[in-house]
Every structure is written in C-alpha cells, then in structure tokens.
Length: 139
Image (cartoon, rainbow, N blue to C red; front, top):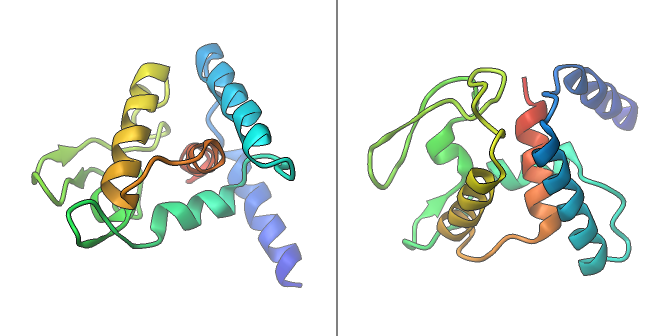
C-alpha cells in the first residue's frame, strides 16, 4: 500500500513538472550518461532520492549541520536566506521563477558550489540529476 501511495504522489507531482529547454534537456542527458558509467545499475533519476539529498542534513564545509533546505527552505516557491552570508536567495522553483533551470552554465555552477558547501564534496552525476529532478517537479 505504501508503494502505491508513493507512486501516486510521484505521478501527481510530475503533472506539475517544468518543461526544460533544449540545453537543459541535453545537460540532463549528459548527467544520465555519466551516471550510467558511474553505476551500471543506474535506472534513471528519482524524485524521492533527490528529495532526500535536498532535505537531509550533513556536516558542511564550515563544520556545521546543514542541508539545502537550510538556505532554500522547504517551500521552493518562496525566497530563502543564505545561512552564511544572510543574502536573499530568489525562489528556486522554476514554477515561481521562470529564469531558474534555463542556463546550463548557472545550474552547473550552483550544483558544484552547493554540493561543496553542504556535502563537503563534489556530487555524483546521479545525485545532481536526482536533485534537479526533485526541484523541477516539486510543487
């Protein structure tokens, strides 16, 4: 029953998915190819894995317990605050800010920077794809 409920939640959330532009689709395809090389059992990007990565707290590069939610909040349609700089972060959801996830260069930059800040390491292709999948599909 739990698996059916989870599948329904994912299907409902996918109805609200953002349509990526061509360059972002190509980037996601590149991440998929890299993920398959890193893990032969890779079956595709996953919203639930992305949500877990985004919300789980880790000891970040500054030695404090932090998650992506620490700065972006759990409501991606609202502004966040960077916990280190106190700078305002515009909504991460492309449903709230149509400029999000339109430029591959920016997505790569912020994934690289945020994985280092939060997880104190470089993210794998699968992790990056899972996080992007989560963000673009979250209501």
